[in-house]
Length: 375
Image (cartoon, rainbow, N blue to C red):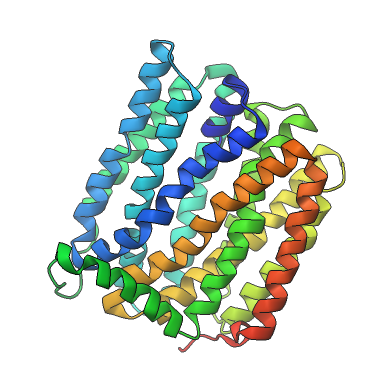
């Protein structure tokens, strides 16, 4: 989250539209591969799959190291990095998510939230290290990321074995099994509206998070990688804070209500970025945005984990993830082009308006507000 914009914006000095395209390279592979990844997760030992995915993900990092050392670092190299990391994520995410139910022991909301706190906590450490790029350069950060992936591979093997005997993976059936995932999501009155809400998250929130925030940080405030690190840390500290509250508050039942309130609060926060403000106020606003995002992610994942069919869990979770992974690149491209052709303010107005339309449709056409814990 810090290394990528540091290399692209500060070292290679690419345009906003090109940066939006680069962010697409990180997200686009999931559009094509994540349901396949979920299908494979339902048919294989996910521990072994995660082990190999972590090791494969080190490949583009070594490429960047060589590119910097031999002086051939380019936009194309970073696109390759994005595509490889995106493909790795498409297989890692469904496997990891399906394993959460296995270790939850009936406390799925608590397990999901603790997993998120762990993830966001270590993201903050990574962002702190990323902020040192102005002084240390990017090489130590790339090496640190390689070691992180190797550590992840080691602990993947330590995870529990599948709780039930999985049907063997058959290449001939894979198309039908992928189609089944969409059918099951469509049939679920809980998972379908949550999945649709993730399209809004991708278009309106993720696109702005990936593209608008880095350019506000550089254009308005003149910061480099330190600024990226501070802004990213504010956002993810917010998610960490809200998820800590969710762990403490164990008796949450109205999952859909919490999800929709958090989604709704994100729009005025996004709209406030239209105005220029002191950097510390900007950081407070990003922290608030992160708080809402933490609730949205936690409630969305909890609902999907809870109501997914066990034999189809990896695939159904992958469809849920696909919703914002597919819309996120579109949001990034749209935001990048609007910023380049018009202005940051125009982009904020357009994406906020799209968000309002989405929330109205979800409220009027689905039962998302009424989704509750079955326990």
